[in-house]
Image (cartoon, rainbow, N blue to C red):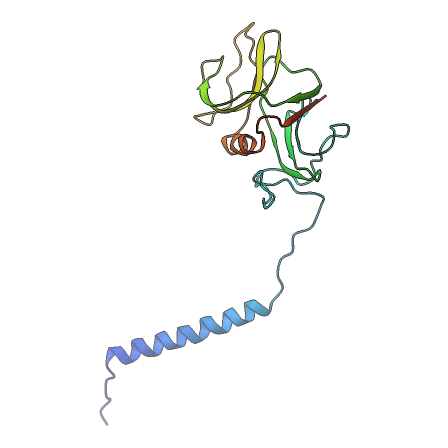
Length: 189
């Protein structure tokens, strides 16, 4: 008895159909299995200044706005923590992030965003963007910004007075959108 040989297209079609059935069966099993659930641990900081923001990838959800920082829509800057919060009108944190302060700190208190500048050169010679000014002290303008190249500020030269509070570019873009002229900035210890 001689064996007949099947054409290769039949083999390929049969193998493909078998693979499709196997993948479908596995997908069905996966859909019925357990799903991971995120544990809630308090208000989450968000990735943008909008009300539909999602949690930021590098920020802990447990970082709360400092007590005594006021109420309503505001930017909160904690000197000791080197951290900023963008807080909406309902007192919900929209975003929080760490910063690199300059050598001149604003005094604790309440300020208002005044001037804003899209880009310039900082007093340390670094090209910066999204500058949001809110205070002045000892003749030094103090404001939030980020370096165009995304770097952290270099150590200030001995005796240099810098008022730039630098942050990562994504954080700076969110603060720029949130911190329009007239926005309250609360500085706490």
